Image (cartoon, rainbow, N blue to C red; front, side, top):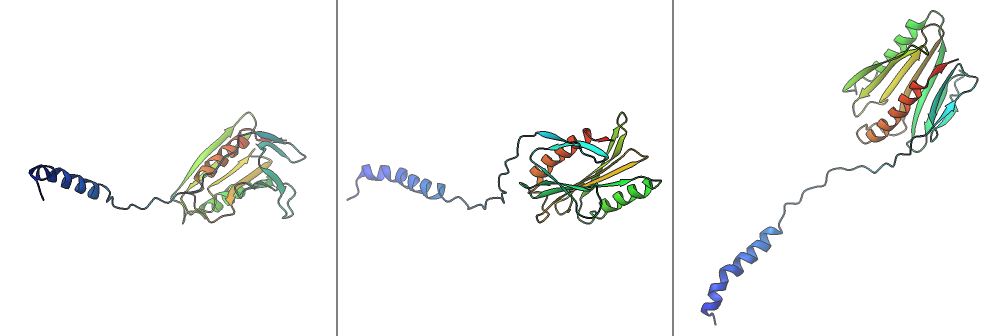
Length: 194
C-alpha cells in the first residue's frame, strides 16, 4: 500500500536512481599511446686519449669500438643500453676540405624526405682550432637525428652521425636522442687535435 509518506519520498528516490545511473555512464575514452619509461644514466665522462690524431671525452656508459672498414682512425661509440651508435670517421685534409664538407652536407640532405626541419649549429672553438657544424635533424622518420663535422681547416676532418638500431620513430626515442645530444655536445666541447 502506497502511503503519503512514500509519495513524498518518491521524487527523491527517482532522482537518486537517475543520478547513479547517468553518473556512471561515462563515454569510454581510449588511452593515448604511451611509451616505455626510459631510465637515463647519470652523466659521467672519461677521456679518449690514444694514438689517434684527436682526443675528446665520452660517456662512461658508452663503449668505443673500431669501425672495421680499413680506416685506422674510424671508431664507433656504442650505447648498448639504447641500441644507439655514433659513427666517427676521420680524414686527413690535403687541399680537399671543400669536398669533405660538401660530402658531409650531402649525407645530411639525404634525410630531407623524412625530416621536418634541419637546424645547423656552428661550432667555433678558436683557441683549440675546432670548427664545424652540427645538423639537428627533426622529424619522426629520419634515420639519423644528429650529425656533425669538425675540422681545423688545414690538416684534420672528423665527421659523426648518430643512429639507432631500431625502427626510426624519433617521437618515442626523443628522451634518448636528447640525452645523447648532450653527450655529443660535451664531446665536441672537449674535442682537441693532436
